[in-house]
Image (tube, rainbow, N blue to C red):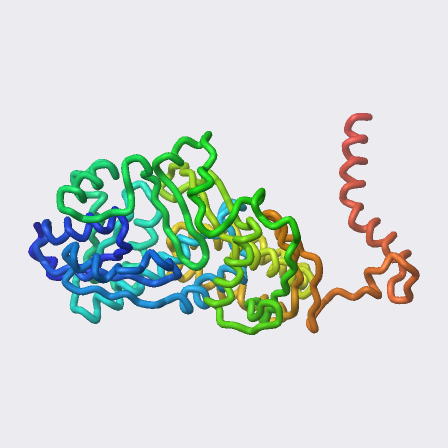
Length: 405
């Protein structure tokens, strides 16, 4: 089809789309295809992946363990910003895509490939995330987006194609929703979830029990922070990936982190997404509590004003952009004194802050107390209020003068 393409690196997950794409690329471009998979915490989904890719037609397979890098260099930077998209989504997929794309680019350089491919549809956000990353990291690579050029119209067509080529796929026409999993979350979309009136089936969830089935006794945990990064759980210091995995387990068994939302995709349409993010939900709650006693008021308010824009950058695929890097530098500067310990109560879907302490705290009970104190003169508040209310007073007097004239 295109003789300029000599070798392709495909972002391969072993699911329906990329399994079909792998065979389709081989048949269409008649060149070697390298299957690249990043282990970001998919767990058992990676079992037998290399063998399946080879059986489906891959010439080479790379499965790269990037769990530590994913949490340390992508999840934690977003956590330091308390980043959340449209007040709801912790962006588990958005943060994973640039790292996968970077792995593809590095694999292309290593194997001599001159093209990369992905399984994102022409309606979704992931096509933008992958391709902006490719362009930022290696502009010379050709990009193949099968969903935008092939003849298939939907996933039922893909299932028929897979069956015709004896490609095993984990999706059926009776259960056609798709999922994406990593250490930060698992997402579900499409198929039966497209009817936004229907409640998600309980058996769909993977990382969490329903709040109704969570234990009747609350569980208390403590999370330690250093310069905005979580470093310990219950006094045990651990690496980023293990820490998030542990919190996923603790949050999941207590029914924490389920989200059902209709979000605004970058390409312009609304889409329903169902997410499980137990560990990320706990960390964001704990981090905000840690900041509440260690971050200066004006610094916090300026940073918080930038967070929606920062989250949009990540959601829309601009991780490797100068504007995201600029904001990240500013955000990280705010985190130098975000150190200490947060105590949380996990109970039936709720993550409740019940304690916080820090050696860099700005909270002083001598100033905050409602009891008698010697450090704060309450009479000072009178002049403070008078000066701050002056413009309001003048405006009202002006209105009254105009009415009387």
